Length: 607
Image (cartoon, rainbow, N blue to C red; front, side):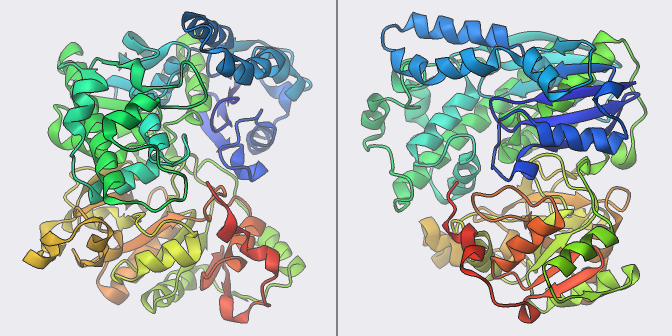
């Protein structure tokens, strides 16, 4: 049976195909359209997943959409009416799009799937998130938490899954939202909502929690059970096109930071404070979920807030659960997977399948397109790109030597990842032992802020020797401390540093992936799910004694992660990357033709 899941129109449109209950393909539309966070109808992603499944639209048995547009529209109308006439500007901005497009999802699906004449069914937004969290997880029984901005009415939900059954029992409703709180402070700090939240999380360790108490006393009423209410006087998302109101400016003592203005210690302190509030709310919700579930030892997480990997790490370390599993495509893109799984199990009543490679239903999240030798060779020939072709068994040692020698390598292998993280299929790699590498990759290759941290990819079997993480972390969704045996003791002078001056301190044997608080967002790499990346890490360890590499997404600021060999070649040519490895094809920057003026587009892109 072929079942298609679709998410679109809000954030990160995507498509997913199940065949007899198994996830065979899933991808975000942005990877094909090259428009970051593309929310439009995912025509290209649908075409890909159908092609991967070997079918056309007429071969589909059922199509699901990840939320209920009519219910969401009623919430928007009711919200605008409740603050009328102050909400008029918002309605004039959003209303026409709803009336023109978003209300007519079934018609749009049928136009986008010529030849399909079956049902189009709808799940609730947080039901899709919950299904994406529980059904692919390795757990037979688990508590489930979903946390995001807002779906139809729910902004957070709690439930329990057992076998093929899933029940959502409690929720927090709009306008009270942990995701919107974090996004509002993202906006206040001058970053773009729905893409700048990662920057706030990365900025937080440079600050002090000077405003945590102020936020808890005035902006959010956080209860012991994790439920909360926002003081809406400090927010603007109900009545206008601003996320925050002037009252928040007065509370914090300064106006909103202008985008691209200098970041000061004040901004770092605000970032730290909202991060602390968010972590505390997540931790209290997790404790409540554990208690209400009767002490189930397993927790599944999804929703955009579940991409707050620092908060996830705290839940694992300080919460009551023995095991935590986070959906790698936790945001709206994962809704395509979630609705497909919800229909397969809840609507059709099918049992869950045994876990696949990696011990869960995601297979390492390598669910996107891949490209063979002939396709890569054709692109390189057309682009007149000098390169050498190696045998597969030569690649690990060859690339490890380049990395150990200081090269930054674009690594393009196998199927593309599903979700926002590069997991060793579309990655930029470098040596984490070089403390200057963070600055170089941020500024010369990624074209982004120098404070942004990089994640370490580590051999799964060697992770315990390098990090304090007590579980596998294949999807880069957990943060924990670098192991004490790898850390460098701080001096009194180091402890006295503040703000970005702290970047100068060498904190571990792998400084380029050690954040200023000694933490790291860890990816553990398994031979079962990514043998080529695993082999490269093994080769790097043989050469250097270090089983860790910098792993950051293969893109530049403002652009999606690369999808095709042509995307990868353009990114390589437009940056100061040293080497590009496309399958067996190795390109060195020194041998490439001079770059044209249009090939540095990433340097000017803003996100």
